[in-house]
Image (cartoon, rainbow, N blue to C red):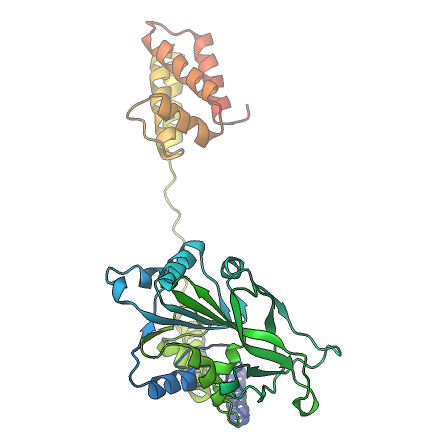
Length: 406
């Protein structure tokens, strides 16, 4: 039976868990502003709405999900059938050099690369002779942006404001002979009258294709899409892609998850999460109190001692007393080979220059010292007799090789 103190402890823990569960359930859900940009996420910076809009608006367009790196996707045997627009939307999109070359070769064949990201791959910017900078307010407080497109047919006089302070990259260095400015960004001021705009959406031709770069991925987030009529801006941004061909939606370069484990779903539901915590804590309490009641002392069994070294010393002493020095040399050689195999992990089937080099490296000895040791072993084993002084010299060499203090 539990003692009075144990019962008080258990009831206190249960009361504490009940209080924590109530407080957690009564607290309003916090808004998750993680920049996921995953098509399955319905949080403010998920792309569930924009993905659904793209799928429903362009019904004649094939919208394919790409769940692998671009290099693997474009390296398929049937890559000649991969034509259209490759769409990357994330907080950061960074390609390896080989991957970028594969993408640019694909664009050169008449396709379109579209990237909307805060941080665009540096090697791509270098290739297109572009540089980016961040837009900052003079008061260093307000960084809420407003965006618009410059095309007169796409309501260029309308600014779309974003009411959150975020970083606002723009293209501060562009190749004016190759670059067409499609959109602009400015910092939000009173009545949106600020005219100090900077390019944040550009187009460059590349071979037979084109590259579209956009630095305001929030435009594809659920929050922006569902605010006022901001979805018009996003639709106009996508108006520059050819919807008569396939659109490949990248799911690989995403900060958020596209596929979720059962535990992830549990931990993102407050009620399931606390049920899971209570189950774990209850299990620990059960193990603690039940184990304490039923635990029995475990007898200590002294393990058998390794008598190999003592036996070897006994045999060596016997040979030494009988002055059978050559037999000791043979035993020492066999023991040394066993040391090389078990400690240094080097095969001793063949003792050649390569084996000696491995032994020297793994034992932190020089090749010359290692070679000398094996030469002494060979010389003494070929002699008909071995003197006490030669045996002592061999012992010193072995001791020095193993870095053992005398």
